[in-house]
Image 1 (cartoon, one colour):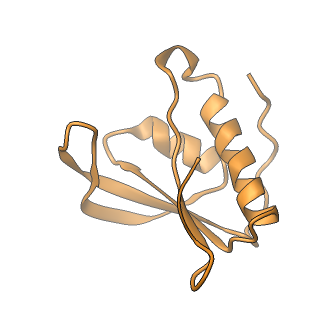
Image 2: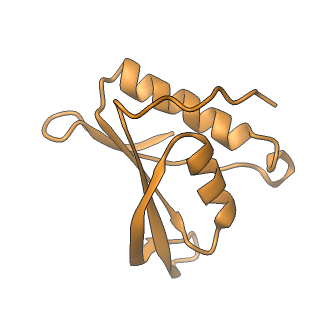
Length: 107
């Protein structure tokens, strides 16, 4: 999903996703993120999409990478979880003119 959009100055968006435990490791999150990314670029004409996740969650790195988001760096305590705890975070980004990753099969 798209969490925050700036279509006025920067043409950027912050992307997010959640996957139910029973649906993990099936490509669902990567497929959904890829679909939302294509829509954000093709329909909304956004130029840069960002995704942030806790460094302690390597599964989110795999999701981002499969959807074509490159790791740009680490933000110290840049992610706050639902319990209010802060974690170091990875910043991934995808530019509108980045090469399209190979299609991800659904389910």
